[in-house]
Amino acid sequence: MHFNYLSKRGALCLMAAVSAGAVPAYSQQALFNGLADGIPVPPGGNFAPSDKPIQWGPARLAVGASYALQYNDNVFNAPNNRQWDLINTLQLDLGVYLPLFSATDSSPLQFSLGIGYSFYARNTQLNRLILAPRSSLAWTIPLDQVSLTFYDSMAYTANPLLEPGLSGTGTFSTFQNSVGARATWTPDRYVLTLGASYQNYLSTVSQYDYINHHGPNFLAQAGYKITPETQAGLDVSVGVNQFTDPRRSNFNSYSFGPYLTWRVLETLTVKARTGYVLYDFARVLAGAPQRSFDSYYVNFDAAHQLTEYISHSLTFSREFSPGVASASSQLAQNSAVTYSPRWRFTDFATLFATGSYEFGNNAVVGVGSTYNRWGAGLGVTFSLTDRLNTSLIYQWYSKTSPFGFQDYIVNTVTWSANYSF
Image (cartoon, rainbow, N blue to C red; front, top):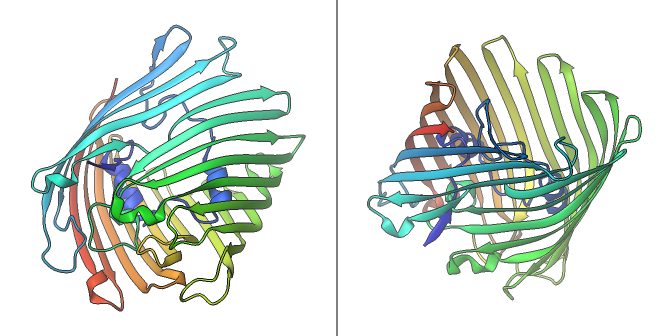
């Protein structure tokens, strides 16, 4: 059995993740893991709850179910001998919001889980369990100007398209778990955050056991609120990565740089991060005569509401992660730009599209190759009732590299239906 996830709002969010060339967030691991983990999950957790959540004593529950049917013309992402399949996916979602000490929301325990199963009509060896990303348990404790959050988050992923460096496989799957705590102090306009976590990253397919690693991550962040919706500051992080495969070198990562969240206009928000990153390897590696590698990272996101009905967004990222293409791919780099317009042409229907381009190197440290990948998608979603919505999405990918055996073209068509109880 392998493992996969289908995002919380069915095919719609799946398309958004895939079309953006999204990969598991190892980039500057301590920084981005620290920022992502431990954020309290709203009631409903991994899916959009209805306006009237289920009240069970002091707890508020949100329960949802989804079904998706996908046609994929190249399930193994292969350059030749393409194999198509029909994939049926069933998923249940649960969100729990429980104030622990009073009927107020001052110290809530929050739980979020999405679980299901994908059935392949032809390639049944690809059948897989689903655990939605950001499935988590989080507890937030407010103490005057200080907020403490303790969390345990996890995810199974098994969509090879989420790893742009991979080709010729349909079985790549991993389990990620992060346990940690964050403390945020907000005196006046200042925002000071310290975080620590321990991450385990494991392949659930023995062929990729060389990516198994674990270690602690540490984060410090100091910011200033220029306005209630505009903040600027500095991020600093340290990560420790210990691999179980002797062909991989353990390494520490260090990063620091400025960040900005800017409400430019009432309808335009920009979020940006950039900075310096250093990777210090425990030993000299084949294809990498030096033990250290340094560069810069970038994450940029702009969201603009053009009119009441039309919006669009632009994202750009330059990130680094442990290489997955082979055991000798010690450190990989990926740069991606994505543009996504949306048009709500009626009160109950939205048309959306996505275009993306990625350039990467399977091994900026180690032995690997470069690649280019283009993506495009078009979809429509309908809100049939306040609890039921459905989506139809087309997605296209084309990857090229200096080696033809790493090339592929993939087309998918996905229909999904989602119900919130």
